Image 1 (cartoon, protein in one colour):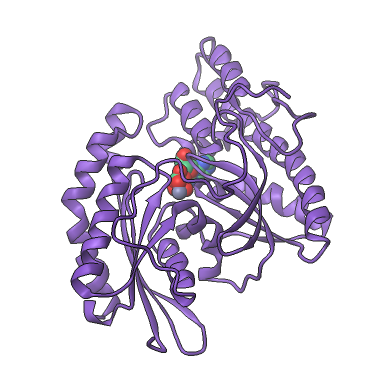
Image 2: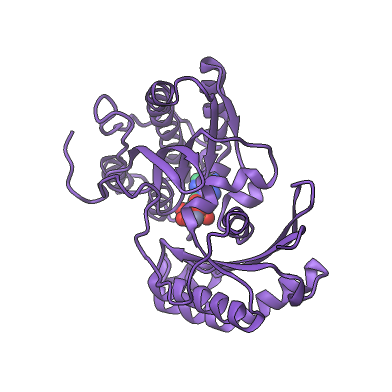
Length: 357
Ligand code: KG4
Ligand code: ZN
């Protein structure tokens, strides 16, 4: 195995076509040589959400160009690459298949190892691209499709402590933004809307706040906002509703994170006091501020990926590929796409399962 390890990562699980090349030098230092992300927002905007068939078609049209750009920007040649890593789940099966097949074809033609990567593991390890981070640590994964507290015990070793039983947090942000007339994807814009509003104007519910451990629920909150939004007329009232939602989310996360800290302290036997917050919603400044505050109170070290690495990207996929490459954990070229791939395989699927606490 070369001393220098160079991994080409591919990500097409949803609406971003992304290719990245990272390198680990002889001293174990990781460098992102290129990180190209092409968003499909303009394609899906008019539909108010991601249309799988259109997303897959766009991946097919763009993947070669994005890969070429990533190779050019890295200053390397394809022959320098040590292994190919592609996301194989979770995500939209028609989208996953594009990046997966492209990665397999590259690996076969270059005669180098192929590595399938769990997209969520990419988010989970993403801060390692810019920070020193040792296992174990507590992770809050907040993205468009997932909301989970996990104990991250090592590569591929996850114990889920809590999860949403209905909507993911990013999904809740996007749906509520839509109700307020904000263009898709509304999450980031909802946050700036909220800055102009009175956060105490509307009292909103905090579902399962006193039960269910650090499991979460956002459906009731969404319904409450749906009811209120039909009576909201002025822009100021919309800002107030956005601000009240943002504040409620911060309070929910403060309470549930305290529970997660207590559970994690018990299982990790105080070996770690590191708290990683990853996924697209980790870019939310109000949530960051609140979580930093609760970390201080509990003497935890908060770690966020760089903002540009919070959302979907292929550098995080290449990173997991690198870790697997080092232990020679390669996959065969018949690896199928796995749309519901979990992080903790032993944890029960609760989303939409009608769970009652
Ligand atoms: O991790 P990600 O890029 O894709 C998934 O794997 O789902 O997360 C995308 C989600 C979207 O729902 C988006 O609206 C949300 O992250 N998001 C935000 C913010 N930035 C992105 N939500 C709230 N506040 C933000 N600043
Ligand atoms: Zn993601």
